[in-house]
Length: 178
Image (cartoon, rainbow, N blue to C red; front, side):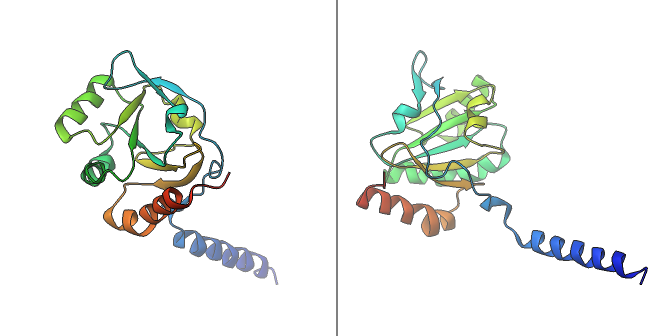
């Protein structure tokens, strides 16, 4: 009897561990889904003297891609973003997160610039407001400036075809719920 309680506790802990190991860490739900994009207004990375903010995300379905020059996974994702930008399905905006301006500019010069505009979030405060905990992360924003999806990790051809593109086409064709 005295070994029964530790045995039960051990079995419960193993069950929790087994469930936790099956979860996909990239599918962390965002509390911002279905809510207006957090307000921000930041300097643009590539356009000195210009700003970019949440108001610029209204009027059409768009992507906001959070990236940084120091991000290894961003390098993996970047060719996919370049391809998407050439397809011109929707505008792709960037949020250069916790980066050095010269490093971000160098990254875009070296690898290409898929962004219609890229905001420069040097201290990461805007990223925190958006619930960013790692880069890359990408948000699908509807025509009303409402966040409809958060993709954690690099966008791949597979995630684009199976998840992001169908949602984007739906939002573009049907409009978005208010």
